Length: 74
Image 1 (cartoon, rainbow, N blue to C red):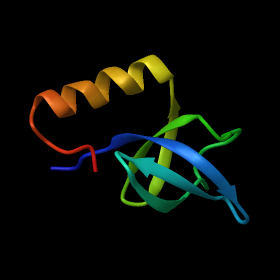
Image 2 (image 1 turned 30 degrees about the vertical axis):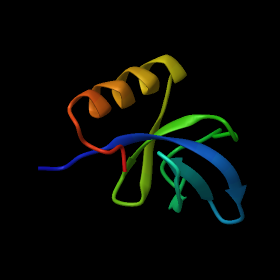
Image 3 (image 1 turned 90 degrees about the vertical axis):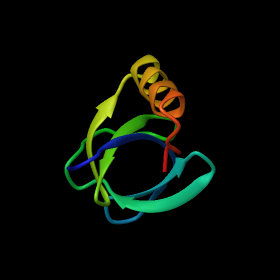
């Protein structure tokens, strides 16, 4: 089973790389598959790659559902 989770972009780095926040954990990921990402945006993360941008409300709903299921969002 594969899992993609919403994460928030906290910094943009050179070369299509961003630092994202995953429930307090920060990780550098690739933005090569997504255009026009800005700091503060949410993206769907899967195996180190942002797959698409996500609306803030949808990201929050998904993160709340993950938390309600008892799974950490990381």
